[in-house]
Length: 334
Length: 206
Figure 1: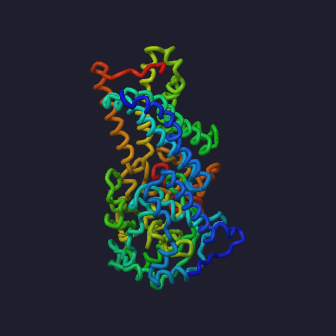
Figure 2: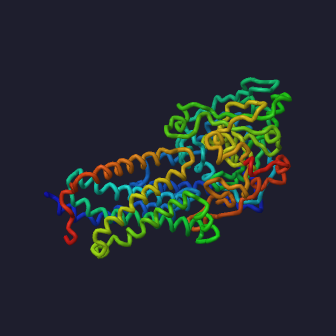
Figure 3: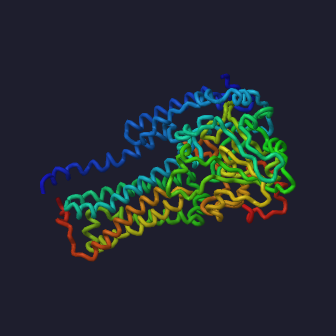
């Protein structure tokens, strides 16, 4: 499959081309193998030799075709993209383990085909929709978003997906629908992290948005990245991406979308309400109780340059979304 | 004791073996093998190894007493210094590489972040122990040397608090470390009530 990227004068091709990824990967594997020789790496090191191209090749043709037929979407950014190798090898997806490389190493056990999503609650067309149904006739677009993790690092990722509002229109919520609740797959057989003891997380992972946030044109349902189908470790086959909120709001591997009248529970705010709120809008003025949110490290960083930059209100999307929160005390509704 | 002298001869190995994790992490760092956020990985690995070495230091005495191998006590100083080396590098990497030696970033962290405060305190408690680890200090301080070096207990407790505090949801590591330390401390407390059972004090001048 041809991996095509738009050529932009403001982004050096070397930053985004797969060739660079191959080079980096060899470097990475070589170093890991060398470290093994020194006896410092766990036996799972061999799984580091993952193969995203091979995974993409196993995806159903209709999914790959839909991703290939994407068009360029807005907004855009002239910021350098975080390389594919980092976007797919540095993930928080606790269903596969709490280490950053755990998802990359363990997400192979997730079966994304067949996949279906249950639409429930206050909608005129509830039911179980297959992933293929959801993609059928749905235009996809590539959008380059900043992703700001609550842990004070960030990436720039070319996602492929469709606005959530498209799906919402298709299932026709009633006037009672004031919130949208999302649920990740709960299957400890496929998701080793859900078998872990001593974890504070209650599975399944749940997230939610207010209706006006859910229908906002920036809110995306993602099915691919970097011109390929979405890798398992990034939340295949279908994940949310809300670019003005901390990354944990953008729930992965969604199996259920429910339209509710009251604010739905969300995983992190249930576990640690003083640290994570329902809104979780990126806000440099409101620190996490344990660390500052004023700055972020834009990945990849290097040993001698942590690449700090100032965090922007609403992750730089204030112009588009600040009006949603007019009159709200953002220090209280963090 | 048979073999005792032979094993003592290998004591110098603590340093080349103990510094392997440091060499590995630095080598990985220069090769880009620490992932997309290498500074943070470096800082956390140095801290992890520092804590491991500190727990090992604490374990020397119980091991020596229980196994009746008094010569093991000779390892304690070098293990402690190894722990101090890792924890100092942990601190340096945090302040220098991560925060770029900038007081306007380091200052607020030291004041506002409890997990940083307890980590810093732990290091400050270990500093006098490292400084007085030489033979001359030991002779000079006499009985007070032992009292001073009990600071390792609060230091390790603060280190554990630091480790608990940085977790987001997975507590398996701090639980494991805490169980080991708790066992060592309980042993130590019970030991304190009994007469000294250490088979043979390592002589100050071998």
